[in-house]
Each structure stands twice: as C-alpha cells, then as structure tokens.
Image (cartoon, rainbow, N blue to C red):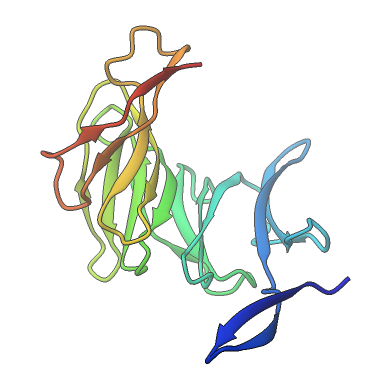
Length: 192
C-alpha cells in the first residue's frame, strides 16, 4: 500500500511520499527492560542499544536525530542519548540520584528531566553544551513527565502538588518557562 500526501506549490498539486516514521518502545522481558526501534506500524523491531540492565522511557528529539532514555547501565538511573540507528551513545547525567523522564528542547540545546536530587521528584534542566544542571521546580509532592511546547518557551508537566488524594486527582500540568520557576501557571485539575 502506498500513501500519498499532497502539497500545494504555486497553485499546482504535487504528490509527496508519506514520511518514513520510526517508533521507540520498551519491551518488558522476563529479566530485563530493553528499548527497541521499529517501523511506525510496529514491524521490523530491532534492539536500540542492547544491555543487561534496564533501559526505558524513550523520547525522540524534534528533528528525529536523537533518542533520549533512562538507563541503569552504570548502576543508578541516568539519562542517555543515542541516534535511532544505535550509534553515538552518550551519557548525559551522572548522579547518584534517580534521573528519569527526559525530553529534549525543540532546538536540541537543553534537556528537561525528573530527578530526586534534593530528596523529591522535581524538574531539572541540563544545558547540553556546558553540561550545567539547574533545578526548575522545588516542591515536596513531586513533578513528573515534562514536555516542551513546540516553540521551546514553556514546559508542561504533571504534578501531585496540592492534591488531596494523590491516587485520584491528577494535575493536568503547571506550565513554566525553562529559565525560571517563579511564574508557574497551573492548568485545571481533573479527577480520574
């Protein structure tokens, strides 16, 4: 089956082939968690960077050149990045704390991630060029699953802050600019 996308250029309709998408997923094996890449339909799965320890929580860069993920390959949970073909493996964080749930900024210069550095799950920002790490949120109830706005000006995340029943109420996500923690805005909370 061939899918065609149509674009308009100068009033002419030009047929374009469908982009070749790739997915990344974690396979829960009997003794390990491993990352795989596959075609968008799930066919042709291949191990991304096989290792005896846990690899999980994969996320693509906007340009598709990198996959960031969490790995226990050096003992504690740290953030790594690798090209989708498995080359260029690089450790981005190296801390005894639990670093997880990373997302690259749209321009690929920064990485937001969750870490329990300081005792609680908060958001941290890594400047990739300098390796400088700074804390974005500071809250005792936990902030999770950060994601960048398409323009890179905001980070949305889920949080347990101000939740009366942390198992039932989930904050849809405060929004913060990546350079400051002082102007967080909170989206409505839903029960669920």
